[in-house]
Length: 283
Image (cartoon, rainbow, N blue to C red; front, side, top):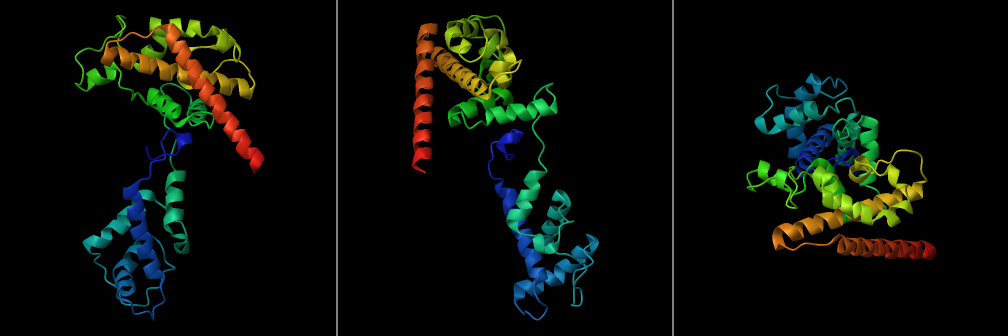
């Protein structure tokens, strides 16, 4: 959750790490203060933390003032944070909360996706975070890959549902992969969208990886890839809606109605693109 979008996260601020880093940077700045300053906070930080800086190999720290070798418990968090996140090689003057947080996030690695190579996984996460998608479709695509959608297999594994089979009558377990690709209903809806799909990508290039990850075999124009990825995200959005309507409301949704809802979502995208073009012209 704390990682950036292009590495498989959601960019949620890591409040605990931010607060810890701010406290550590405050202690470092206090220790850097001139020796003739008599503020209690500065004197206390220098008195208790100079041995810590020596153990970390920061020999350039001024130790010509009295200091204590026994670090109290409320300053041990400083040494723990530095050892945990390892930015001790940075110059002490570079210790600001923004720089420290930037260094921590820069060391994040991309979330792996099954058996996909790391380079392909990076490409998938860029697809999920694409600016051509709405926030709702980004969330659905992200949860589909992370396995966080509330399908029956997910709920059954956590003791929240009695059954794990597909609610549409399939004998297979209702996983995210089954919902968006294996289910006969999903295949029927894809067939109903042939006219829309061939406008972007040949139907022979539509695979399970295309639906789940936005990966298309062959070479295609960037605009065609983005358009087809939008269409497939609308497809997944409507499939999830119709599935929830069946499970919660006990109401079936025909493939024709699903196709109409997908067209409505595509019209919303067209209106969104038009508003973006107008704003660009004004600027």
